[in-house]
Length: 279
Image (cartoon, rainbow, N blue to C red; front, top):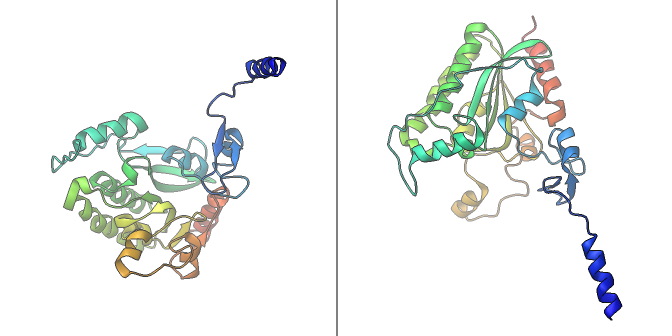
C-alpha cells in the first residue's frame, strides 16, 4: 500500500500541465479541437462544420482581398440621446464595450476589393452589445448605401444582431426606416445589394436592411428571424417545427436565396458581382 501511494505521488509530480487556450470546445458537436486547427479552417469546426461566431475584423479578413479594406467614420460614437440608465448608465456600457472590443459601435464599414472588384462593405459585430442597432449602426448603413450609390459600386452587408438597441428608444427604431430608404435608392439605380446573414440575425435588423438584399445569403445553421423561437412558442402556444428559423429552414421556405459556407463566401460574392454588375 505504501509503495502504491508513493508511485501515485511520483506519477502526479510528473504530470504535464497543458497551457490554457490551446483547445476549443465546439458548441455543436461538443468535441475538443486544437485551436490552431479551428483558426486555420476560418473558425469552422473541421468535424461537424459548425460556424463559430467571429468578430468584424475576422469577417473582413476572410471576405475581402488582403489589405484592401479602408474604413470610414471609425470614430463615430453614440451621443446617448435619452441619458438612459438601468443597472448602469448607457454611457458606461458603451465605454466598457469600446475598451473591451476596440470598436466604437457594433458596425464597421468602408471600401474594399473582392478578387480586385471594388465594393462597399458593412460588417456588424455581435460582440458589441449583441450587435444591437442604434443610431450609429443605422447611420453607418445609410452612409454605406450612399457611398455605394455615389461610386456606383455593389454594396455588401454582413448582419449579426439581436435587434434594436433599447437604450436609444425611438431613435433606434427610426434607423429601420432610414436604412431601408437608403437601400431603396440602390434598387432604383440598378446597383447590386447583397445581404449576408450570420448567426444570429434578429429584430429590427432582420426587419429592415438585412432582408432587403437583391440576393440574400446565409451561413449554414444560422439563426435568423424577428422574434426568438421561445417568444413565438409562448405567444402562439404551439410547438415550432424542427430547425425553425435556421438558415436551412428559411431556404426551404423561400426566405433566403443561398446558403454559403464561410470558405466559399468570397468567391461566391465575386461570381455574383461579375454576373449582375459586369464591368
